[in-house]
Image (cartoon, rainbow, N blue to C red; front, side):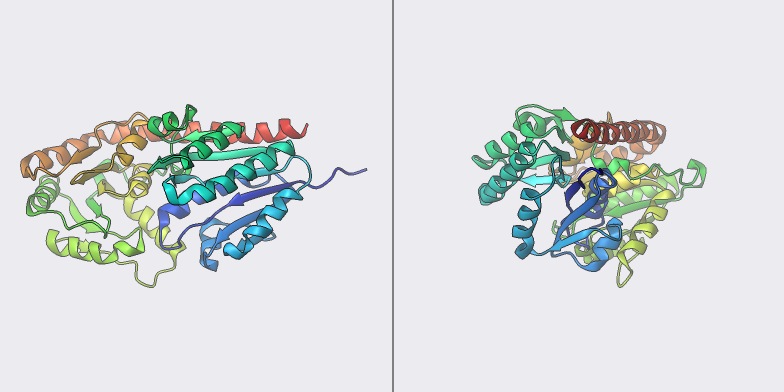
Length: 358
């Protein structure tokens, strides 16, 4: 007599115009693949291209829009014994507007545990913590067999837990070009920030010139495209638009660009993660950095990658950027270790699921 079918549910919401979000959602999906007979994915309002970006396999039951949340809960409640629930990796806002959402997530966790299933929370970071949302989130995390944090501060807010590399570091280490052939300094900044000041531009231009690097601006998040054009104009660099390029093609093109970069300057964490995976040295240089990038890279042993540009000291900024250029071997070593650790975590996730069903 055959055993009853099993079910895994994975949350995969996110905007198709943000390649960093696609990167970490894909990581969570990879942990969920082949863990059950049936795979259910909730993608919110994402378009069809989002499914291609993530590599959602044919045969997955895909739920869309908030109208399908009731269906999602029903599939959880009616799942055979030992279901698997995989939450999204990434940043978790816990401000006062998210209390109801956290109540629902706690209920989902309880349902799965009562069915003797497994709850997996891939690497996350907490933003804007307020109670009772934080309290609810911490309770749900403690009830989950696998609850991971990408920085020590988030783990502390949740009352403890494991700190592991951001799941984006598992996206594949690339050899890229040899150091002697890398000829670009790449810049990608958030469009929502004010333009940097003249001292910042002078520092970036001088650092590139001193190393013999061409400046290129790229777009990893669609809303940053206008900013990338402005930066290229001010830096005398090459602007590479996203335009109408398919997101899957755009991600491949960007990773190829990072393969030939010596230094990548950004205030977007997953720009710097992908850059580091390609062997480029990541650097955050903006006024009043949030600390998110610093914390995520410190968790893999890379410190000193961020500098606050608020004081407008062009020489200090130039020295910072030039100093980063000598860290390529250190970056490669730490990133390789992070990738190995994430592979071990994925193996642990799969072993936990097998043990629950034994």
